[in-house]
Length: 400
View 1: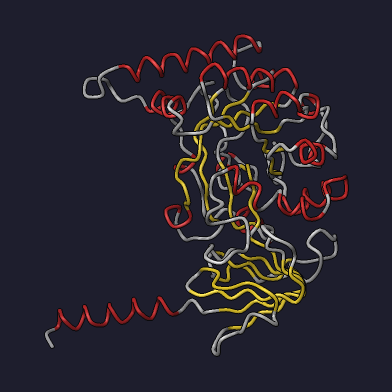
View 2 (view 1 turned 45 degrees about the horizontal axis):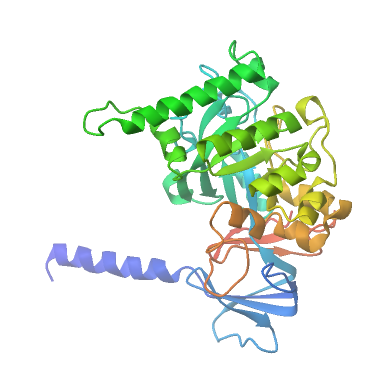
């Protein structure tokens, strides 16, 4: 065999071997929560090639020979942080790891989270160890238009490996807090006028001949939002700003998702009529400033009103920059939301809002094997995450 042929032969062998390094696994749980259906007592989840092959009671699911076995008290889908800045904001809170907000201009729609995301950031590892397998991350609140968000796995050696969707939407903020970062706008009306003008400029940009116009990354992102190709995530906490966000969405026919929304319980009827989902602030967010009306039972009120929502890890200016959705959902569960709805708010709820429920958010045959193993009730303070699988790969077993 010629040398070059041998190289190809051994390369092919290595590729075949690499494909088999990911073991077929059987996960047995005293209770398995598919989320998309009723809990399964004494349940089994079979995984092969990174996907769920079967799920059901142990009496009905036969475990094939050779499957690697794992035991847990409780088994859930991988958790999804519906909105975060992790990977852009770092745990050390020094200039070198603070890429979550550029303050050189109040409107920068061309910025991409993809270009700043750090797969080696310690906060990514921290969330992964707490069961978070998927992040919707990007620029922090604080600019009128701060850039483009992304969907990412919490494992992977490079951003290309980790990325699920390079661009998930356009991030915007309404409220008086923007004045902390920029000389203009100084008022709410000025800020909304600037956003409205940015959309009108993007609309005019779209009317130009594509072969003749100069490329403008910011206008193109806003044009994609106007065309319905990208959702717009507007961070708005006060009732006034929430209503303004709804008005902007109606005026420009935007696919709107509300973020933060501390006062949303005051305008539930308006939000429901607009058919707009909510990425709710962390349940334990500090109630001050524009979040001064935040309440522990807002998630329960959204559930009762039939408004699609998810609980986010959010952004905080102080260390560690983001909260754990596992802990936040536990508090919501204890304040009227209940265990099953709270678990859905950090799994299938965000998966549906972020349009990835065909792959993530629940334990169903054919879906990715993003799975978390607990040694007790996930929302009990003393319970621990013991193993985390992302696409069938064991990515954490720290038992935290």
